[in-house]
Image (tube, rainbow, N blue to C red; front, side):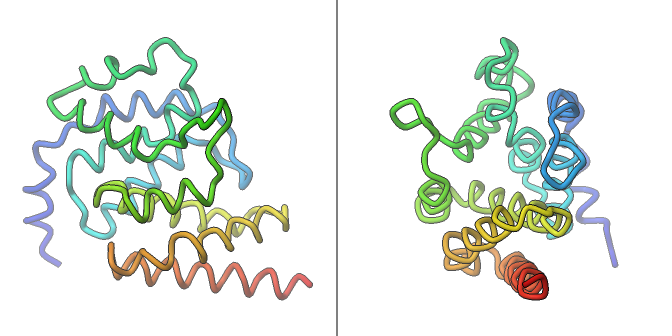
Length: 190
């Protein structure tokens, strides 16, 4: 495979400041083990795996959960992200677009959140959500909370799969395969 075009596309992309921001999530555990930092890195790796080299999308993937996980920290602000580099304002806007909103002081319902992104989100937001969901479904194989796995799989099937093929057919196929795999795992456990 000729990686020359990819290398040229990524040559000017500075990711280090975003990786450092993501490292603040190392102490945030996940249900499947590991931590939120590794999830951020995995999400970016999935985008790269699909040859998505949009610098704003890659940078946002590294901190896409930052405001949900550490939004109460004084350094997690629009100004802190927007001032990182020339892409900072667009990265901030994308991260906020994929961040769960507060509705009357509570998190918006997950199904509404997912449909909002998949129906009205930007192309970048949709691709970021697909990569995020692929990462989550891969690690879902290590989660032992049956109710959580059933709910997460159903949300993906109902709120993401109906829209994902139009966004990225290859990512859609992987998501569909992962949903089928998780559903089969649940059936074997019955």
